[in-house]
Length: 639
Image: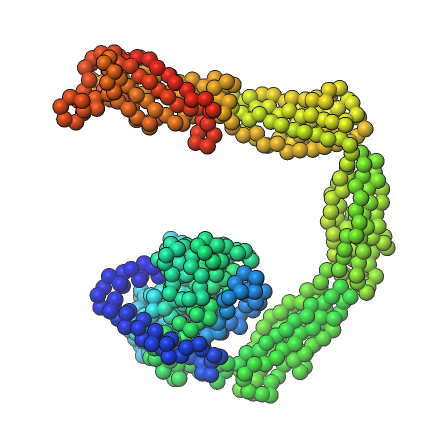
C-alpha cells in the first residue's frame, strides 16, 4: 500500500482526486458524529479475478466465498475470536472500544458485465480474463485481483479506492480460508485477514504507525501512536514503544492472522464514512448484483458450556439475531433438531445449523472440551540429605471419585504420597468418565550444606585461563566436587576446590558430601579483559620501517595485535617533535604524508627516522582492561 500510495501521490491528478475523497469522508464523519448501531447495511458487491494461477473454477469460487465470509465476520465484529479482544481489552486497552462496521460484502451473482461468459446466478469469479490491478468493465465492484506476487508480498491496495474498476491485489496463498485446486492457504496468514487488512486500506485506513516514528499517526484518535509495525503473535502482551500500549490486535497491523481480531471504533467510523462519501457506485450496484441481500443482518449468537470433570453436562445454546422467524435448529454430532438449546453433551465436535423463514442459513462448527479436574497442592515436604523423607499431598474439589498416581501405572485412592526422594514429580488424577488432571512440582534434597561459588573470567579469547572456585561449608568430608556431570571432578578433605584453565561457557557445579547432601549451581564464564595485561599474553607488533615508494609493497605504517584493542590513539612525530600523523582508527595506516605544516594541504615526509606513541587498552567497548597501555618507538621512512 505504501508503494502504491507513493506512486499515485506523484501524479497530480491522482493526488487531487485523493484529497477530494478524503475531504468528502471527513465531511461525513463530522455529520454522523458518534455512530450508533447500524440501521442499514452498506452492501458492497465483490468480484474475484484469478490471473494465471492454474486454480480451477470450482476451487476459485470456494476460495472467494470463504474470503467474503471471513471479511463479513471481521467487519461486523462477529468473528469467533472477538472474545480474545473482550478478554484482553479491560486490562491492556481500557480506553479503547472495538467497532462493528455497517459494511458487508457479497460475491455478486446477477447483472454481470458483458464479455466475461457469466450467466445470471453465476458467481462473479473469472479465470485469466483480466490482467494487472484494474479493469474498467468491473466498475461498481470491489475487485479482488488474485495472482502470484512473490518477494514475500501478501497483497496490496490503494489507500482509498474509487470503485471505478480498481481493487485489491492478493497472492492466492493468502486469499480466503480454503485450500484446494493445488493451492494451499499458508499459515500464519490463513484466516482471510490479509484481505481484511487490504480492504481496510481500500476504505482509507492507514497503518497505525502512519509514516513511521512516534511523531507520525494514522489520523485516528483511538489507535495509539506506534513508530513501527508489530509481527508474529504477541498473545496478550502489553507493548509500548512510544507512550501508550500498541493496539496490536487491529486488522491494520502486521501480526499473524491469529492475533488480529478487531477494528477500533474510530477505524470503523472512518471506514463507513469513506464508503458513504465515495463508493456510492458500489452501494447502488449492490441492489442488482447481490442475490443474498435478504439474508444480510441474519446472524446467530452461539454460547458453549464445556463438559466438566463430572461428565455428560456440556451444552450449546443458539440465539438468532436478526433474520425472519420462525427458525429451524439442528445440532450435527449430537442432539439432532431442537429449539436451539442442547444439554447433556459430551466433549467433542458439533455443527450448529440455523435457518430462518427466508431460508437464510447459518452454520458454525463448535468444539466442547472436557475440563480438567479441579486440584490443589496443599502440602509438599523436601527430603533431608537423601533420607527419602519427602511428602506430597494433593486434594480435589470434584463431586466424582478420583484416583491418583505418580507414575501413570500405579494408582491409589488418596492424593498423599510419602517416602519420596528429591526430584521432579507429576501427580496425575483420573475418574471413570475419562476426566484427567495433573499437578507438577519439585522436591529438593536439602541439608546444612552451604556452597559458595566464585569465578574469574577468561582474560583473552585464545587462552583458556578461566577459574571457578567452590567453597563448601557444613559438609561432611570427604567432599566430591564435580564439574559438568563429572567431566572434571575432585574428592577432597578440603572445603575449597579450584577448577582452572577453563574456556568460556556455561558450567554445572555440583558438591556432594559423605552424608549424601548435595548442592548444584550453574556458572557462566565469559571474557574479562580487565585482567588482560596480567593474565593474557596479548602483544602488539609495530614495524620499525616502511617504504612508501608506490611499488605496492610495505607502503604504509600501522600495527597488529593478537587481542582486541580499544581506546586507540596513534601519534607519529618528526625529529623536531612536530606531529605528522595521528589516528584513533585501528584500520587507518600512515602512508608517509605530513599534516600540512609545509605549504598547503598534505605533503610527503622525507626519508628519516620518526618517533611514534601508541596508547590503547586491551579488550572491546564495555569490557576492556583496567590499565591503559603505552607503546613508544621509532620507525624509519625509506623512499
